[in-house]
Structure formats: C-alpha cells, structure tokens
Image (cartoon, rainbow, N blue to C red; front, side, top):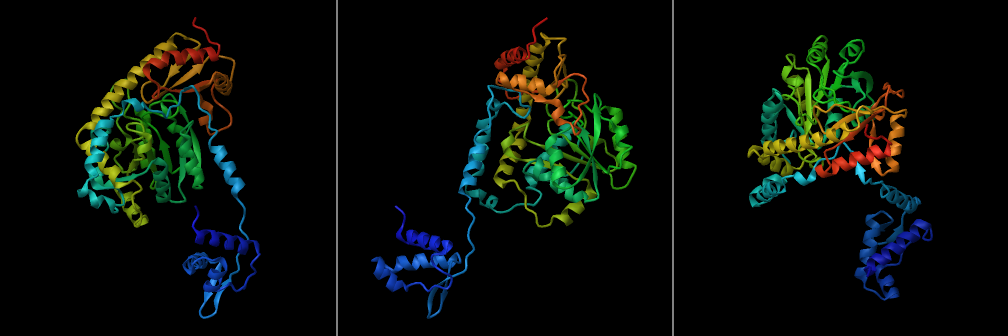
Length: 457
C-alpha cells in the first residue's frame, strides 16, 4: 500500500543514517537505477527529490547525486510509548468533589448552537482574518458593559484585553509589570497562579488569610510591589475580603508609586447570601487595580476566554510592549459569545445557574448538617465549593487517603499552602459541588462520611 517512491526514499534514508552509504558516495543516475529496479524514472526522481529536500543527498549539476553528511539520529520510539502509556493512567473516581467542575447538563446548547450556526455563513469571511490584538471590539464592549452592571468595574472597551485563559494572560501581566516586581500572594491560595509566578522567575511572598481575607497588616510589612488577591471569594478558604481591609489594601497600593493590585474575580457570579460584593477596581480612585476574570465557571472551562482590565497608564505600556501580539482567542468564538451576551442569554444563563448551584449548596449543607458537630462548614457564601473542618485525630492527607480507598476524591486544604507546615488545628477539606446532579449529593456525602467512619449523632 506504500507508494514505490516512498519505499525507495525510506530505504535509502535508513542506509544513509546507518552509514551503509558513505558520505560522498555517488548514487546511480535516475535512468540506470530505474532500469535496474524495473520501475519508472519518475519514481526515482520523486525519491531523490525528497532526499535532496531533507538534506540526505545533494544534487550537483552535470555530475549527479551524492550522499551528504548526516549525524546519527537518536532513537526515541520507546520513550514515546512510555509517555503515551503515562497519559492514559489518570485515575477516575466514582465520586469526585472537584471544585473546578460545572453542571454540563444545564448548558444552553440550543442557543449556543444557533449563534454558532448563524456566524458560520458566507458573510463571516472577515472573521477568518486576524482581528484586533486585544480581542474584537464587539466582545470587549459586551464585557465592559457586563462587568460594570454586575461588578461595578469602571472601564471602557479599550481597557479590556481578551486571551485564552488566565494562564495565558497572567504571563503578559507579569512581563508588563517588570522584573523588579515582587508579588504578595494569598496563603493558602490558587496554585496555578503561584506556578505561573515561579515559571516566570518572579519573587513571591506569602501573606496569611483568615476569615476576612488577606491580612493586609502583614502585607504592609513586606517589600511587595504587587498584591494578587481573590477578594470576592478567596480560593480556597471561601473568605470574603472585608470592607475595612478593602480600603486598607487600596491605601497600601496608593501609598507608593509603582504598586498594583491584581484582582482575580474568577467565580464572583455565584454569590448566595446578600448582594454581590463590589469589585476593588470599582472602588479604586488611583488606577492601581488590574481586574482579571474568566468565563470558565460562568459558561464552560473549554471555551478558553478570559480577560483583564488595565488602568490607563498600564494600557499605554501594554500597547508599547506587545505591539505585534495577536489575540489568542479564535474570532468565531469571540463573536458567538458577544452575540450571546448582547441578546441577554448570558444573563439569563447566569441567573439559572445561580439558582441551580444554590439548590445544590443547600442540599450539600443539609446533608452535612446531620454530622455536626464532627464536621463544620465554612466558605458557603459564594462560589462552587465549601471548606469542611473535621473533628478527627487525623491530618487532612489522612482523610484524603481514607476517601480514596472508597473511590472518593476530596482535596486537602494544606495542599494550597505555600509553607510546609499547616496552620490548621483540625484537618480541613475542600469539597466542590458544581459537577454533581442534585439527586447524587446526599448519597455522596453519606459515602464520604462512611469512608471517614463518621456517624450521625
């Protein structure tokens, strides 16, 4: 089934690599080799042409073809096989309290499919070309309007930069803020962001978190120039930055030139108690807050659309630093989302999901209430996970392993700590609930309590 010219090319290539055909060896002419092998000269010409293109042989005018010097190639087939096997062994659990999972059953497929189909018509040829490097204006306008009405973020569409996920946008911010920047990060905090700082060789200083969020009094005694915070729903503790600390943090940024706050607002849409917490950016009087968020939780993780809002001064610096960058989000996806938002479907979807996740949270907390006071809940005001404090003589890693034996996946809060020593007097566990069907939650809690040998009082 392999074409003759490819068979000949492969065989000659192997012999050259092995050294069977020495460097400088003159190869038979196309006519002679065609006669000897009883095949056409065209086949020989195709094989020789491929070898010339890849540098295994060279063609000398009126002299013929000669073998070139080629270093021996490393044999990597066994390594590739090991890598493929390693990727396929990721364990799946029958019950997984992953905080990153969403309810895929509730996604508005019909509306999304309609917009995708409408955009993919002949009038969309322009969308096949590169758009604005910060993202298409239509989507940036919708984002600016949405975050103003929902989060109180004050900005124009020109200040919005769209990218394919926080992990792609954060390195741009890090480069923009310069090598001299020192970052204060929440402890415990979001591990992906901490890895991004480390991978970009930026210095980080952990700042403790309590029930009111980041301890700004600790930050004030550090040489940090940038504070990375999740004020609306701190990850992973679920704490909300108190009003007094918000003012304190903004004052810290204002008190010295070159200080900034990165406000990560990734799941602020899902608040279940009281009114939405206003953004730090909306309170900022000195243009010191960089607002960053994503559609991963509100729509779907695979959409890969995130964005940040730059203060005017940093916007000018951004355009000088990255003049040749193109947006990393496909324009078709940008326009589907822009139309989806413009027609009000995004707001409707968020309202539905907020009600759905509130029901799941209530179901989860009711199921766990049966096991009080052995287990206590915190961080339930917002987001798609809670923190469970367990009154048992075990570490949180012991509890994770006990759950694993029952094919249940839970997450130790100490894994999100920047220091080796955990500060918790009792083990604390992260429980996500977004990916569960509501009817599954009670049985999942019961299975987890059985794994930990915790009985109802």
